[in-house]
Image 1 (cartoon, rainbow over the protein chains, first blue to last red):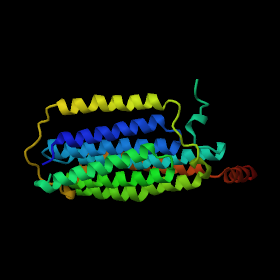
Image 2 (tube, each protein chain N blue to C red):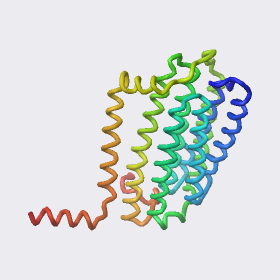
Image 3 (cartoon, rainbow over the protein chains, first blue to last red):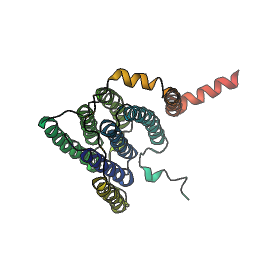
Image 4 (cartoon, rainbow over the protein chains, first blue to last red):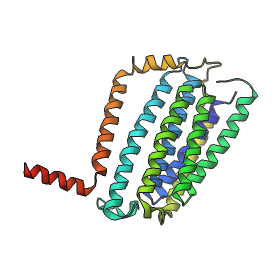
Length: 102
Length: 176
């Protein structure tokens, strides 16, 4: 049997890769992919905890379902914003959309 | 949880595949390559769900992530044609690298150090239990999630309408 630590450490590494992608990437779509990596790491974590720590086995799976739902909503909206930005500026570079920066 | 040596080998194979693909997502400059690597990551996570005997999650992962989200991202790439160039990292890439390493460096020792009180054996999760729980205890969050999805999709449609359509609509309203 694979110990729980392996699953949690794997999802920690995936999460760190997602953090790097979100902070370092310049293209908004690539930033979004980093967020997807982080969300996937979290739902893997929920599923592993549900499987190893919870006798009922259900609650973690429910949370993973909600994570997947919210990810779907978030991606739809974020890509709409990217397409809108591209139409206004002909770029999807997040550095060039800095009007709200002080 | 499935017993035996097979699942252990499957775990290590899947983690190598998933981590390599995630590294590909993080370093690849080509948006198409990045999205293909991302699909491999999604499939790897679905494999982990199967290993954890969460069958429904594995199925939902394949259908929603690979079937919907990856296709949506591909559409966005195709609709932003010139965005594929100039995909280098920002000037803050070293800082981001430090932040990522710091996150991993905080998490991994803590995880390995913690004492997990794991159950010796847990039964597989039947999908009917998950459904009963979702529409029983979690019915209010479930409804909220559907409202969120509706709002997000309406918002997306409003956002991507072309400026010409918007102008026509305003003209029509003024004529009335």
